[in-house]
Length: 215
Image (cartoon, rainbow, N blue to C red; front, side, top):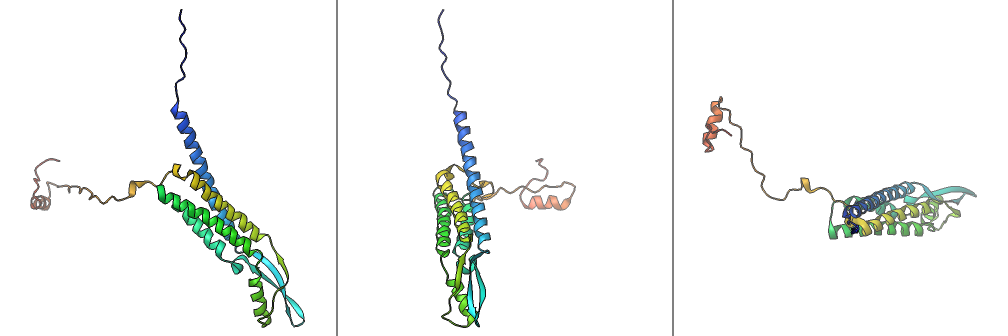
């Protein structure tokens, strides 16, 4: 009695299902990271980044500067990053690659700008000069808060979203072309002719139609 060897049957569906799962996960991760990072950056811009004092009339006056007072670059780039995150799904092939690169660069630029602004005292010096009326006045007892570094962290999340888009973006779905016009004329539906209405019969005759023909 002979033995029949069992030949394994390839299962391509398992591989495609695994790829689809990975695509969905990378898509969800990029959306979460990009949206969360931009939200953090935008919220941090309204927080106090630096504090100090200015000498006024033999005393001192406390001063503080918010992130938006020191630099507006992270906020602007976070908005660009959000727009790029949405635009990733509206373009395909080379366009998606360019938009993904813009998303990553927005995060990197925002992180660099926030890191540089963490040691910038120009905004507080300007407030000290305005408060004292002395153009040469500078802020004293300068202290920093953690918000510049929170902004850096949020910007890095945007950068990660951009890197995910660069790596896996070609596998992500695009906006449906169902509603896109291709320029071809749409077929006109013939008007319904009511045989009980004389005016409809005359209009049909004017169009060269036979009103007695059944649709």
